[in-house]
Amino acid sequence: MENDLCIANGNITPLSSQQLTCITSRGTSVVDYILLTPELFSISTKMEVAEYFGGDHLPLTLMLNLIEPLPVSSNYRTMVQSHPVYKTKKWTSLSSSLALDIQKSFDMSAVPSDPILPADQYRKLLDAFSTTYITTTSPTYQRLFSESPWFDKECKALRRRIRKMVRIIKSSNDPQTRAKLIDIKRTYRNMIHCKKQQYIFEAWSTLRSAVERTAADLANAVNAFIAYCKAEALNINYKKSKVLHFTRSRKLKLEPLKITGGYLEKKGGKHLPAAIQIFNAKVVPKLLYGCEVWTTAISGNLDRPLHMFLRSLSGVPRCVSGAALRLEFAQPSIARRAWSRAISYTLHLLASDARIRGGFSNLILRDIHNSPWKTTINLKFRSLLNLNCKTVLNLECISPVALPLIKKKLQQLDFSNTASCARGPCSGLALAIPPPEGIPLYCFTISSETKRRAFTCARLNCFPTAVLSGRYSRVPIANRTCSCNDTALETMEHVMLFCPNWTDERSRFLTPLVNKFHLPIQPWIVSLFCRILIVGLLR
Image (cartoon, rainbow, N blue to C red; front, top):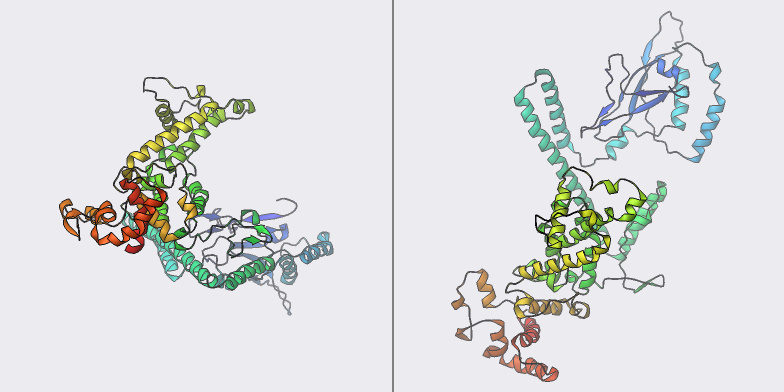
């Protein structure tokens, strides 16, 4: 009891055995309470959840022992239980002023000491209290606007079956029923997950179909959302909001826009560097979440999303390895980025200023427990510093000044591993093309998706020839010949330099280019220029 108020928490029946008010479908206990005066608490008989709809915030039922005033005097008192009244009330400034008036109008000293009072007095008091303070949701509103709209009849039937089996187990403790209950619970969880995902997908599809038609539909959707927030007195946190502004103008309110130049059009071919920046800013941080501590999960499998993104963005076939794509677009591996962050975090704990500031960070490495994090960090430092197993390594002796040198060594190891994995036929290394230090210049200058893809395929040696296609269809090397001659292999050099089927194209395109730029007659230079032109004819 606090400030002459009692907190009714849980079931308050005489045989309640201290049970909680609500156990949700997810198995979590929800503690609901009602604030009561001592007079109301003395006549309270039962408190429970009114309806179960699968949510956590549910209306409560409070049973009171009251007297109904009768027109005819009687020596017997009629025991009547009150029924819950559900009202929807929003808190406003008018309600706060009205609450003060109600508090001043009540004279608590004049309240009778009889624990059982006439019902009309209590109902008057409860109506005034609920009108001012209580904001509840009616069962009809919850059925129409449920917090879990995906929870349909199928889920409810399976939940009833689970509850029935739980009651059977409590009475009989049958092991077969317990095993069936485990399987049904697993099915129930999977069903709820699928229902949620399906509902989210349908809602997103509906919203997408509504806003992707015209710019006016998108503006109407945004305005409707803002109007809803104003009507419900909700504040939008613009600091955490991400807004995509689709416009043809280069400026917004006289301020220049940082646009991607049509990233959503044709796989990002119009401005590929911007797409890579978006991936590094949005997807990579999610992949690196917790890598500073969870070093045992750092492996080459983290590079799969990056490889899939680069292959989809560039439009190259699957014969090109992910390592070759990372070399072509100068993207470090996700594993290297994760180790870089983990090493920086470790050296930050060892910094001298951290010891001066105090705290417990400097005690992490002094712990005698040999954690997997310590083991992997020690092994990584040994590999970077070229130390054998017999050499004693003390991490506290490593200075933070050595961080740039360690990161440079990590970069060199990552580049050498990537180059060794990219030495295949469909790679720039197969044509003796040196890997670029940054994103290639043609990604910035070539706006056409077809020409940019042709340039990428030419650098990666992945044009569809008989030699390339025969490698994956298990055709012998001797049978991968060109249509012009049964003995000549259909390689890209043969098509661009010697094949008689392309004589006119060579004289029209190749000869002027070689004479204009004074190019040395080397196979890979000639192939690089001619493949860009011939791919337009092949497509």
